[in-house]
Structures are given as structure tokens and as C-alpha cells.
View 1 (cartoon, helix red, strand yellow):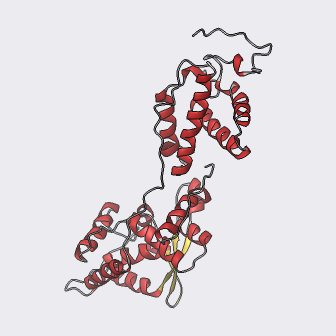
View 2 (cartoon, one colour):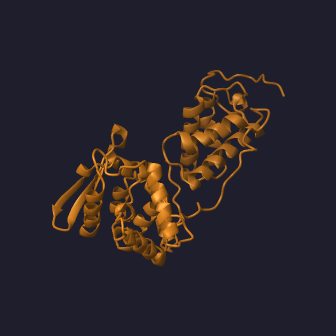
View 3 (tube, rainbow, N blue to C red):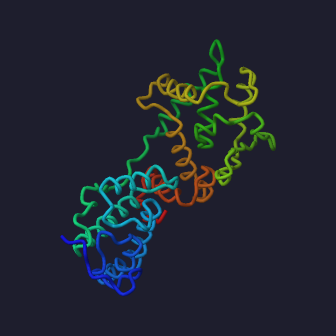
Length: 316
């Protein structure tokens, strides 16, 4: 196929698809592609969504990149960046739509003869909802709590397992957040009432800093723990990995088939709050999640609660 085509009078403004060839800059194709979508009967929402996806591709690959330079490797790298490198959550549904955008766009370029082959053909599509987190049911939770409490009254009392388990069930904080906790982050505001301050050092995570209410039962376990361990800068005197081991030991000691983890208990905390009637936005703020990442998270919480919840197709 010849790369030479008749050029339009104003080369920066191609008048039709016939003005495109493999040397054409990516940015010069977007308006023509939008026209193609509208002529194909696509809705305004779809046109906007596809255009937004292609702007992300321009952000990653460069808007001046010649369309003939895009390869399957380029597009695979772009999808990995969206999912793991961009720093903004990409839901499974958004991921699937973006693959569709690439396939529709590059198929169009190939069909009009602007590029010699379609690099999006090998890109694999994903479908279906994301798998649900593995959590403990009420009976298993009671078994874990009961076992952890037996360690508080053992020959050599140890309140740390019970403290970790109850703290995570009550607050849903992450492992890194738990590892950063200081005794000063626990504020006692009244008898049987307290506030846990969850702080972050990075300015970009300021929205994740929050105040979480904790009850007297958890404060009692905390007092036992403080009486048993020499605590200085951080509340927990072991590494984050050891905290995971302690949770796994609770599961084994309680005779559970499942292995408790920070991730599992975070989901359980959110689910328990939802089932207790807490406002959805309050749960989001408690977990320290942005409104974007909350869309998929809330859908999963509803599914964990046994409710039908479609994951929304949101432009991240």
C-alpha cells in the first residue's frame, strides 16, 4: 500500500479520512474519528467516553506520534499503565471500555487504509465483574475474636492479637497505616469513647487523613496491650509483615480454613458498617478513598452484602 496520499490544502486540518496516512499525527485523527462514530450511530455519551480514552492514549504515547508508529506492544504498555502505573484506579468496566476504544479506533484507521495493519487486534478483552474478596462470616468472626481473647488470659497474657484484630474490624485501616500509628494517635474524648487519628506524610494523600471513632471495648484491649509492651514511637513494636503473621496465627488458632489478612479485614469493616446502616459517603471517608475509587469499591461491598450492584462505567 502506498504511503503517499493527496494532501489537504491545510495539512494541520485534514478534511476527510482520505487525507490520513500512516505518517499523520495522532492528534489530527480525533475529529475525523468522532465524526465516524456519530455517523455510525454512536450516542453522545459513547463519543465522549471514546474521546476521553484516546486523550489518555495521547497523554501516554504523545499526541504528535504518527499513527503508523503504534504497535501492539505500545497499546499493551498503555493498558498496563492505565491499570498499574497511572496512579488512578481503573475499574474492570473502564478497562474493558478502553480496550473497546482501541479496537474501534485502530480498526477504523485500518479499514480506511491509513495504517497497514491493526495493532489492537491482539489486545485481549476482559469481561465480567471482579471477583469478590474472601471474608469471614459471622460465625468465623466470632471464632477468631474468641481465640484472640483467650490469649489475653493465657499464662503469659498477650493482648496484641486481640488488639490488631479488633482494631482492623472497627476501623478498616491499611497495613501501612497501622504500622505508622503512634500512641498519640489515640485520643480519649470521654469514658468509653475515643478517636483514632489516621495521618499521612505525603501531601497528595491529605484527603486520606481522617478521624475514626473507636469504642470503650477496643480502648480496654489497648490499655492491656500498653501494659504488656514497651511502646515508644509506633504503637506496634513489630514489622508490618509480622502483623500479617499474627493475623494468620489467629486464623490457625481459631481453626479457620481462611487466613485473616489486612485486606480481608478492611473489606469486613466496610461491610459491617454498611450493614449497620452507615451512610455510604461516611464509609468512603472512613476508608480514606477518593470518590473515583469508591465507585467500584461500593459496588463490591453491595455484592458482599448479597445485593445486586452493577459497577458503574466512570471516566477515571
